[in-house]
Picture (tube, rainbow, N blue to C red):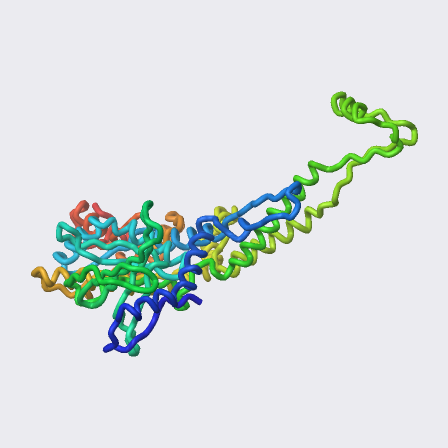
Length: 437
C-alpha cells in the first residue's frame, strides 16, 4: 500500500529537517509508483529475463494488459467531457472560459489516467504571468501530501520535490517546493541539507493542490493483476523460446558412421538424404503441449479481467449482445466507475473552490457550490433501442427525462426549447403524438 500521505498537528511547523525526513520516508512509495507507471508503459518484470547459456533463445514477449485495463477504465469514465451547470450564468461563463484556456477536458483525461495507473492524480492550481488561472497535473511520484490530524483531514502542506543534474555537474541538485495555505516556499540542496531560495504568497486561502483518488483504497486499476501480468509474459516468452529451439533442432543420423562433413553439406545443398538399408534420420525435438499452454493462457486472461473487474471489451460478443446483456457484463465495471466518479467529483469541486477563491479576491462574489457537474459514460449507445423505450414511456415519464436518454442530445432542456420554438408551440405536445396541424 502506498503511503505518501501523512498527518500532523495543525500547529506543527514544517522545518527543512522534517521536509527531508518526509522525502526520505517516501522513497519506497515513489519507487512503487514509478513501477506502476513503467508497467503501463510496457517496462515490466519480463525485461529482466536471462539465460545462463547464451546460445539458447531468450525471447521477451509482452501483452500489456495493464495498459488495456487502464485505458478501458479511463476511456469509459472520462471519454466524454464533464458537463457543468449553474443558475449563476455569469459565474458559469467565467469558469468555462478558464476551463477552455486550460484545455480542461484533456487535463481531466490525463488526471483520470494518472489515478487509474497509480491510485491518485495530483494537480497544481496557480496564476500565470498574465494573471490567469492555470491548473497543471503533477507527477504523483514527486508529491507528498500532509493533512491535519482531525476528522476533516484538511490538506495542510503539499511537498513537491525533484532532482536535476546539469551536464557539467557531478551530483544532482534536490529542488523542493512546499505549498501551504498562504504561500509557496522554494528550497534547493541535497538529501542532507536544504536552503530556502524563495517565498511567494498566493491568494487561494487553501493549499493550491488538488488530489484525485482512484478509489477508497487509493489503488490503481491494475495493481491487483501484476503477478498475473508477469505470469502471462513468462508463458508467452518461454513458448517462443521453445518454438525457436524447435526450429533449431538437431538432425540425428544413425547407420551412417562413415559420413563426412562434405557428405552432410552435399545433403543440405541437394536437400536429399542417401541412407543405407539400416540407416535412419530423425530430428531431436521436445514435445510441446500446445493445448495445455493455450488453456493456461486463457485461464490467466480470464483471471486478469475478473480480478480487475474490467470486461474484455475486445471480445466479439460485445458487438452482438443486446443492451441488457451488455449491461450485465458491465455491472462490476460500472460499480467501480461510479466510485471513481464520486471521488473525481470531490477533486473537481476542490479545483472550482480554488478558482472561485481567486476570482473573489479580484472582485467577484461567487460561491463554488453554485456549480454542479455531470458525468457521462463513454460507451456506444443503441439509440434505436432507446427511442423504442421512449415511445413506450410517453405520458409516464417527463419529456425532458425521455429526451435526455438519447446519447446525441447534450442538453435535453435546451433541445425541447429549440424544438418548441421551431414548431411555434406553447407546450411539448408533439412528444405526446399530438397532431401539430
